[in-house]
Amino acid sequence: MIILTDNTAFAQRCIPQSGDWQERKTSGLLPVEATLAKELFKSSAIMKTEVAASEHWDYLYAVECASQSQFDLLARLSVSDVELPDRTLCCAQYGDEFHGFKNRSWAACHGNIHLSALIKPERKIPGAAVGFIIAAVIAALQTVETMDLQGGVPGIKWVNDILVQGAKVGGVLARLQTQGSNIESAVVGIGLNVEQRPVVERDSFVPKVAALSDFSRYPDTLRHVDVFPRLIESLGVHLQGLCEGSFNELLELYRLHSLILGREVTICEDTRDPGSQVIARGLVESIGPSLELYIEGQEKPVSKGRLILNRQ
Image 1 (cartoon, rainbow, N blue to C red):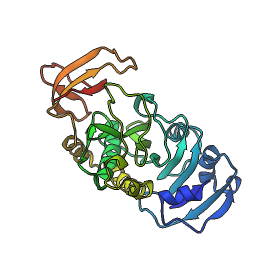
Image 2: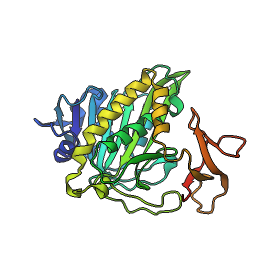
Image 3: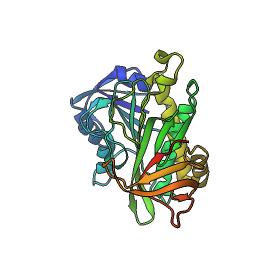
């Protein structure tokens, strides 16, 4: 893996074995490396190293402060004429203009993970329309499961949130570029609250927010450096599996870890209005292959909206 950064201390919190840094000018990088470097780094002088860190990823751009959403940048450049390196990760220590699903704001805090990933499958992938969301959310969930959380079992709240004890600790998003039936590129974003609980406006859709450290017996020992390498490894495994045809297995994992199956829910129109109209209300009986919800008493499945977990 080639690592490019403007802050070696932060890069080493992502990949602990990184070292032997050499200063580079962005103008002197390979063309495939330089496009992202010039967009991501404020300085023309950055540090570069290469380590044997992951079989799934070739590049990591570790930015101290991102002036824009790295997810949006990758998505925009992936549909342009510029060449981007395949199997690329971008992460930021903190930054501006970060967002989650449907462009809802995401607060970026030191010690939390703000990760975007680009892969270029250039092939037909069964289930791709929702598969990349599922692969990313399973990767985040399984990473959280490896942490020693006290009384906290992670689960998935439809569509793309990770909850622990009813509190949101993470979320994912994905965007695809297609040509015909082929997936030319996919950009995946994962936000995971590790060390800090962000200050965000809460509502009936997101009543509680937490960090993984809130559930640790020793909060100071649950750190970014412990979580990041596990997350990128899990993400790489599940994205590769998806590209090789494991959509059905990922879908079953999603269902297995769902927090809403067999629960009473309310689904509202996806607006920022707290009084948005109710689309459906009732017991979730099953989740379909496009993540549509089959709700008791409803003639048609629900495929969009914001979900409230009703009190049990």
